Length: 394
Image 1 (cartoon, one colour):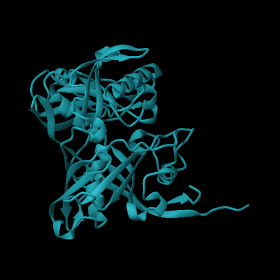
Image 2 (image 1 turned 135 degrees about the vertical axis):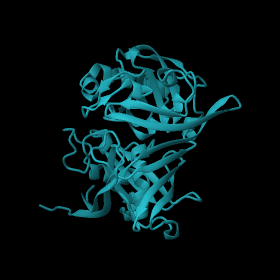
Image 3 (image 1 turned 90 degrees about the vertical axis):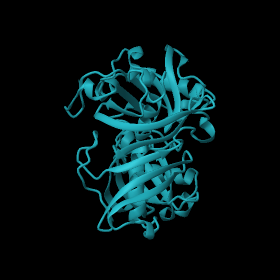
Image 4 (image 1 turned 45 degrees about the horizontal axis):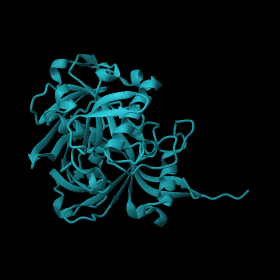
């Protein structure tokens, strides 16, 4: 019986924030996979182990969750005054396509360390000790991210005492600046694409929901937890084991995508699972996080729970965090109202794994809200580096 051997492709397996994924340098990919198309997607699907009808990604590098089923391609900058291009792909577990429509804010924290470690940043700009500033062009959405990466003895510092809820062990802090996070390229339009801070969203088969539709970090649909029959303290099991609520949230997400102009028909939402995101928010309330850590209402401004690829996220997506902070800064949005309705440029919200602090600068220009910057801290670490093996027929 004839067979084709496996091929080895240089790769790095990295954690960034509360996510992890397989990182590639563009030039290390087979030639056919260096450009968008079926060859690239087929190869990367095989790397991760999708589609997997068993839902485990056993025969690949994926971890069978939305947070661990990701690929990243890093290449020389296509835009002046940047160090690298960063392209992100979200890999569904049981579907045979890759969603390239958005960014991963968590993995954004690993791009700077990867770029420095692989010699992609001008050595004259990399200090032996101190902070290295890496300017990243996020190629999916056409935005700039500035990463501040700590250096020690000429190497990226990965260990430290910075704790991030949702990540078990402490590490070195990496500060991220998302510049002009609103207006997601050609599709997105204005920060509030409908022109409203709150819309009445008619959801087929579900009913009417008040929603805040915003483009900031990622296209986002926010609804009140109470409208769903929840209080915002829910953990993963409560939501992910309830098929009815997941179906309702997906219907709301699809209706929001249609209203935002991201799709032409609600049926198209299934082929665009990465964006927009849908989340529900509520005023602060005491609860116990998934790790058993008590979260006090007095220590947070609001509660937020977000859905990623059809499941409740175990913590909070980085791009969704940007959207939460931006919406919280604008008086009158559902997020701002959940946070008490006061003007704020920094918000601390409670998520299933604990809390997160994010800042956002917003202003009005000719009557329209715009966001100039969002800031948050994450950490990143190389888990494994070397090569992945992929059957040649992939």
